[in-house]
Every structure is written in C-alpha cells, then in structure tokens.
Image (cartoon, rainbow, N blue to C red; front, side):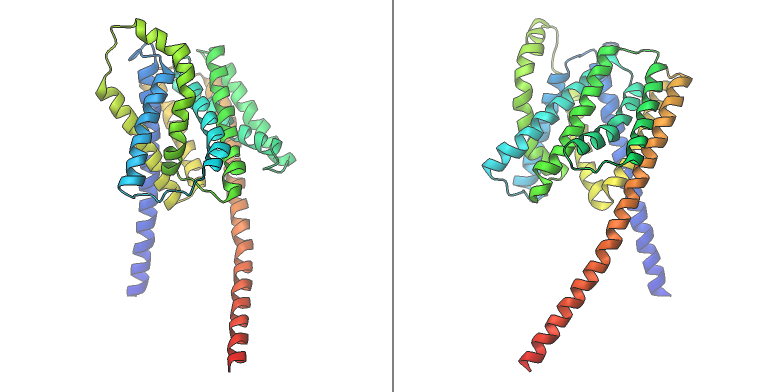
Length: 343
C-alpha cells in the first residue's frame, strides 16, 4: 500500500514537473516573440534595427553562457578542437545568424499571427532539406502530408489582410535557413558524436553569430544609427529583452532534458494558437476566416507529422529493448563461461 502510494506520488510529481516545464517554455517563447515585435514594430517602440537587436541578444547570451559553463560549472563544456569548430560550428553559426536576422526583420512588415502561420512550414523545410542531403528517406505519404501543410499555409497567406511580399520573403528565408541549420547540426555535429544542448550551443555558436552579423550591420544599420542622434540605449528594455531570450534557451535545455524534443514540438503548436489569439485580441491584428481555415489545414498536417514522429520513436525504442536484452544475456553467458574456466 505504502509503495503504491509513493509510486503514484512520484508519477504525479513527474507529470506536474513536465507540465511546469512546458508552461515555462510557452510563456518565455511567447514573451520573446511579442517583445521582439514590440521593439521592432514602427507603430510600437519603433526601433526597426533587427541586426542590432540580434547582436545585443548574442552578446548577452554569450556572456551568460560563458558564466554558466566556465565560472559556475552549471553545464559541462564539450570537447571542441579548432578544426571541428571551423568546419562544423562556423557554418552552423552562419546559418543561425541569417535565420535570426531574417526572422526578426519579418516583425517589421508582418503581424505576429501571420508569422506563426508561416512558421508552420518548418517541418516541410526540414523534411525537404533532409531528403536533399540524404538524412531523411523519401516517403510518398510524408511528402503528401508536407504538401497539405504547404497548401494550408498558402490559403492562410491568401486570406492575410496585411500581406507584405518583402515580409513573406524574409520569413520564408528565415525558415529555410533555420531548417538547413537543423539538418547541418545532424550532418556536421551529431554524426561525429558531438551533442550541443542550448547552453553549450550558445557558448560556441553565439560569438560566431556576432562576427557574421557585424559585416551586414556595418553596411545596413550602423550608418542609420549614427544619423539618429535622438536615440538613447534603454538598458531596461534591451536588458529585459535579452534576459528573456537567454531564459528561453535555458527553458529549452530544461524542457528537452526533462521531457523530450517531441514534447517541445507539441507545446509549440499550443503556443502558436495562443500567439494568434493574442495577436487578434490584444495587438488588434486582423485575423480573417480564410487565415484560420488555412492555418487549420496546416495545423492538422503538423499534428499528423508529430504523431508519425512519435510512432517512429516508439518503434525504435521497442527495437532497442530486445537488442539490449540479447546483449545482457550474452554478457551473462560470457561471465558464466569465465567463471567456469576459472573454477
């Protein structure tokens, strides 16, 4: 009776903790997106400098990641040679800097709700690029699902009241670069046995992003910032915004570590709907019926994609278990053989 009660209590605690991690991640992800929109939008804080904002984030995150790894030993550093850094981390850093630059730029031209709808294309981009680099196997069923997601997003775009071609190009480019980055992580790091969590990833990748962003910043934004002499750096606004961005990475570290990456994907779907509702009710962005119908089609496709991934993970786990039991039984037989020889 006592064992059963303690077991059920531990299960309840694990479930509650999982929900807490999911809730924290949704809140922080939601906050960072809305905060970035507030800073960059010309109708709000009116500071339309996405490269500068991204560089502030990267500087802040690099500093805190350094403290967590080198000073407080919160996370173990990864063994990284100079050759591996140049051949693997640098290309990933370049893709990450482009992804962040373009995604932040899109907030100047598009509504939060429409950006979330366009982000539904991420599984399509990841799968397509994965097939291109032979990291994913081509399946007709999966490709049909990807086409359904694309069709849903196309309907949502057709019904967008504030459609801006340049903003759409920026957001789609951000999705493409981010999808390529995720595939490159598998090719350049995971395949070599190197695993970077969000904290170690910031430690190695964020300084690299700063270097890549510095060149376009000098050409695009620095001359304009020099002319705007009325601007004064607001430590409260940019400090809290950067802190939220870093806290989001820490939340990803906890969420994936305590649950799974798939849980984060499912939580991301919930977050997207919350952002669309917030964008419509609070920011007063126009969300049309065609918008919702199109995103609904894409949403069903993304749900199916996540369900298929979960099924594939379960199959892998069930395949591993017999192999583990065979290995264990083999070790036991070897040990028995050694003991009999010693006897």
